[in-house]
Image (cartoon, rainbow, N blue to C red; front, side):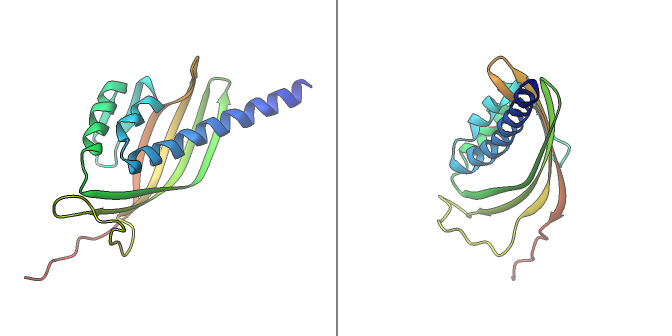
Length: 156
């Protein structure tokens, strides 16, 4: 039964890492963005498409706590085509497509439902995962843009 045990462990690892991907999106969109930090290893790295980044769980928590404070922003991070490959017992890599719908109100709290005619941007998340005693965590996350909505000129 060693083969079956290995298969179950492989499937569990893949599922645990997929859950981290989906939890990331849910936390950012639900108003609990600072909780994203708990998905990362202590030395985790978050790299954005603009070249900026955060290193370490506390830096990630601080940055995402600022996102929590943006009541004027309504967003949905639609994660799809999630692919996880465990390459060692304690390490995995993954990719996911992101379709991001976002509306920023000019002031106050974003209306629900918020207006959106198409995604703000579409891109690829590249993940590395590491299994720690408490379970699988994101070791690194890197985002690359594939499509970006053009800014429209406002009529004068």
